[in-house]
Image (tube, rainbow, N blue to C red):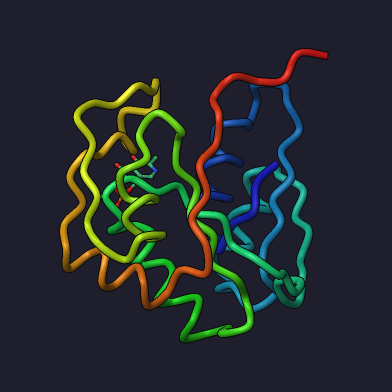
Amino acid sequence: MCASAGNLGQALAWSGRGRGPDVTVVASRAAPAAKLDRIRVLGARLELVDAVPPFDAVLIALGGGALATGVGHVVKACAPEVEVICVQPLGAPAMTRSWHQRRVVTTESTDTIADGVAGRRPIPAVLDDLLLVADDAVLVEEASPRP
Ligand SMILES: Cc1ncc(COP(=O)(O)O)c(C=O)c1O
């Protein structure tokens, strides 16, 4: 199952065709008809929806901050009431600490399996941008709680 504006849905429908698993694509009714037709022709079940349901917050993985500032600017431009929350590993907290202290905070090392978000030296201009669009920045542990 996937949510798609048309392209991913076609790809998933094509991949699933003849291989066994049923493919369901959820797409906007406003997506291009040619793409929706192609998804159907490829054998996927198509569920059409009118609009994205309202949501309260967007959680964004935070490393150096470029992703979060970009997404954050779009969110705040389109839906200013939606909270932008940055999430960073506890073992790589440089940008989160910087955001809270409103100044660049560097760290000597990182300790995380998430190498894509393991920055140590935030860029001042990115921090300035992030301070404009993020509502909060939180650190999370990597270990899953044991039942
Ligand atoms: C999957 C993923 N999420 C989040 C990030 C963080 O992006 P940024 O460094 O712009 O904060 C990265 C960075 O490469 C990434 O690979």
